[in-house]
Image 1 (spheres, helix red, strand yellow):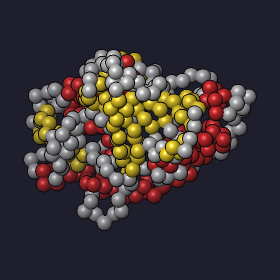
Image 2: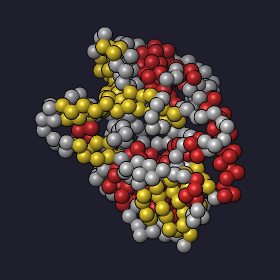
Image 3: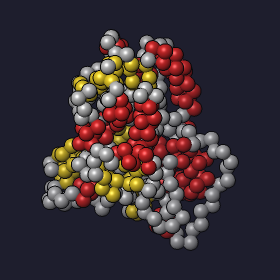
Image 4: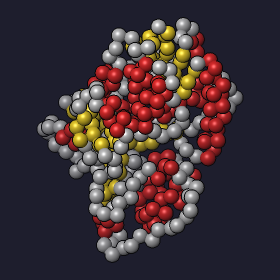
Length: 358
């Protein structure tokens, strides 16, 4: 059997390993001390929580849905998000209740009709009108990306659905669920094969190429090509501020977004507060954990920033990657392909990629 190396033990790398393990001996490495990448979850104070932000699996892809169900039972979870502006609590995405709460029951959205919007500001105003754009999306987007919507590709805010009824669910997909035993246990099952070896706390070094016929790299593509004189791609990271509280619940919902920089004269630098106890309806009396998320340019790269400059620069890195395919080096995943991917998209990409080598 050929020996192959997969760099990154997140969702993409783990699915790739699972699909290829019957044909290849696989070493999968990760610089972190755990498997699962950003999906990693664990118990803290008796509460199952994600280390790197809430993850809700959702998909319309029957192939992906059937695949993930081979490794765990999935519990239906219809994710809801609420926003807080001053003392007003409202549903996100925008629905008829959002309009009644923030504006008035008689307010009618005056949508623009910009054909082929070129940025997220145009996309958002097209969908919700200028007033709701300014109230909910403009400043929140800046808090999230350190860029205003007019600076970001139209795809960023196009991902957020808009309701013409009072449906409070965040996603529209046919399947919306959480793995019954958590994401870490799910990924453990993906990697449970005699031909897969996992090595944690291990940085990738180009010298480790020796002995491997193929390398699949799921880390940031510009980190791999750091020897080139190309500018760096931009990413957003997150500071997670965890607080332990001796109460049953802190907030009425799992996720509360804070679009404003300041509310009632209180600074709110965080984009959202997550209370993980809500997920799985966990019964842990008299204690809870909340996590405030503040995005930053410094730290682990979580989100590629889809500006025109970054997209043009990524094309230059992609040219190098295409040339390196002759050396059997391949890039995929959110960071390897510099593209925001939902979990089902990352799984599908890894599954399709694996098919090329079977």
